[in-house]
Image (cartoon, rainbow, N blue to C red; front, side, top):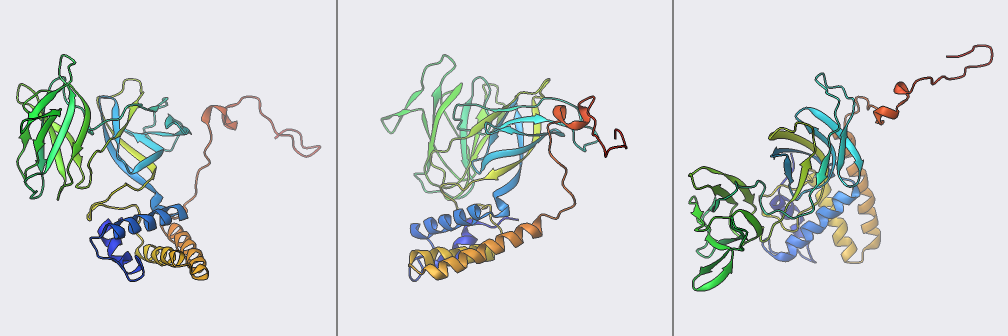
Length: 330
């Protein structure tokens, strides 16, 4: 189980600057992120994680932390990466219910502002999950059903989109109906903010969750190019992770070995204070810790060789191997 950003800050606080920094200082946040980045590029096992996602209408939205998908399982069908543009193709595996197919996940080029889409025409509602300041807000921009860009007024001033107040445990609904979103911004909040959709019949659904530190989040989406693709599917993706630009105190980080975080903090401090020998010693020790951690977590029960099935030796007819003279073919 990964630890939280707040826990990492507490461990690294003594090593930030010459004598530490206040817990809520921006310098400590920046230092903590720098140290975590150092641990990840050193080879932390947490650099690859399993993400459980759900697709809707043939598309799946990736969380920011998922940088590069490596393996995918869609409703029990397995695929592997074919190139750096995130294409996946299925191949034979040990699943009992395996079906030969040519699954592809193709990245859409446009940015998205919610995890899921609303219907063809919908209102947007936002709800705070903790007590917020009176000026906490979220602004959604977009177009109406006729394709016209939406403009509204807030306290007598024009707004591109609609300004919505964020209130704890209360949904604030927009007055206008959207058909497509083109932008989103919010203030920093004390807790997570949840966005919903509501159509003209009163049906409601989930759009997205936003972290307290999110101010202008965007998401990447992948299209499931699968024959007879189900409207909804469960995806398990093993992918290479990356750090977010900002973290809330209770956000999870892709590093769970506290000792490695502490040693990395000591190395970064030594490097910053020109203690070269100490920095080199800590760097070598950290690499040993990371290797031990990886060996501990990755129990080797035998690893199958990865090949492209259609060109593997077992499927090409007429292949023979010459034996020692006098023994003929094998």
